[in-house]
Image 1 (tube, rainbow, N blue to C red):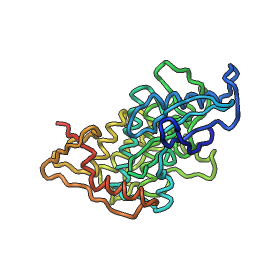
Image 2 (tube, rainbow, N blue to C red):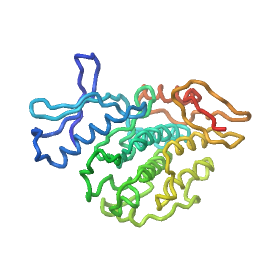
Image 3 (cartoon, helix red, strand yellow):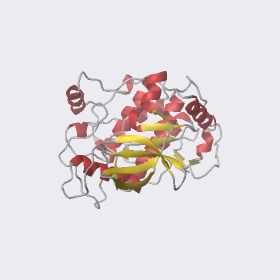
Image 4 (cartoon, one colour):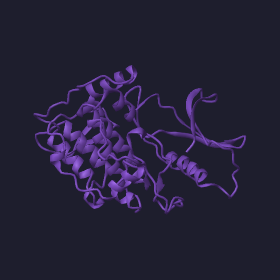
Length: 313
């Protein structure tokens, strides 16, 4: 989908990431599917203004090359973190996936399906802020944009949902299935679905079966295991239908409440409402791959209450 470079905006005096198509083309009507996807990625990502989504600043053409400039994220992908240090502690893994779910929810609310949710497309910057990246395969279901990928199998084998593997249209629940697979990888260091080749992975995903809660580690909180089972139901109608609810349940899994109420993430507030007998999650586990990321994430986890958790009554 293009090359990404670090650049510098001389007008606004800031570093940016520049995504560039590998070949020069005009803006005529005979565009390739790759060119159309490139333009679609820029447009859809630009629609999202959310703290957990990489911000697009500009789009244009220079000397025959199309490009768009976006927020430069200095940090590491979730894939790199897990490969470097192994499985993440439950608190850290849920923290990351909860915020990725918020990013997906922001897209779903305006009709955008990501269609390529996987560990390599979730980043943490140096301050520990989670960023969902790469909308190169995203689709808009708002009715304003033409689906230029109709009839094309999309997604990364091993991270797609059963319905997508069976060439059915991707749904917001398909994104949630991918996030469930990503959560499992973050907490175990292993893929939930393994195969010897791309075709083998797709074959296994087409024949996916319901997840038995007994398959999941018994040292995980019971609520976390229930969350993962709900994310990975074969039938999309049985999964979470709202990624914000998934985010809330992930917080609830690591921040028990004696009243058993759902917690919602409210990043716009710094107030903390601590219920009676509620316990605070404690950061644990190995260090992060990058010292700067480690500092940011641990600070975020130690001050996890500063996510501004709101309690639904």
